Image (cartoon, rainbow, N blue to C red):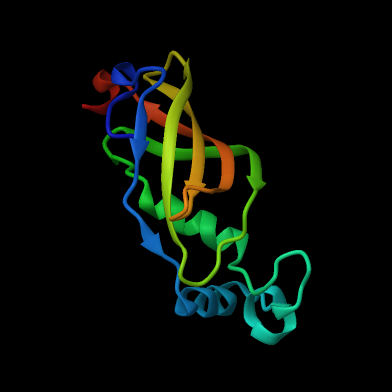
Length: 148
């Protein structure tokens, strides 16, 4: 996603990440790490008959965490994750779903100190092309001169 210095990034720049399949192990390890053992994520029988989700789903934060690991952040230019706005979980992710990330630069805000904030539309999609999460992602990126 951020593979250039701030002064080389253009509005409309797009990136599509590689995919990654969410596994049973991912869900169990995430529950263990975070302490989030809600039965929606960890009890197959509890949610089998659920009218809203119709079965067990991955943690939304797990999907977001995996997605952030899928995007490319070039350390020489991208100095900090600056924030997420308008985060929405749209479609559940389940064991066996393969997700990928699509981004598009929507705003460039120079800070005047050799850095700028890059705002990108950030979408996670599943293997069926359904958007599972949408947000506005902000990163702090240096200019080429500041990065030397």
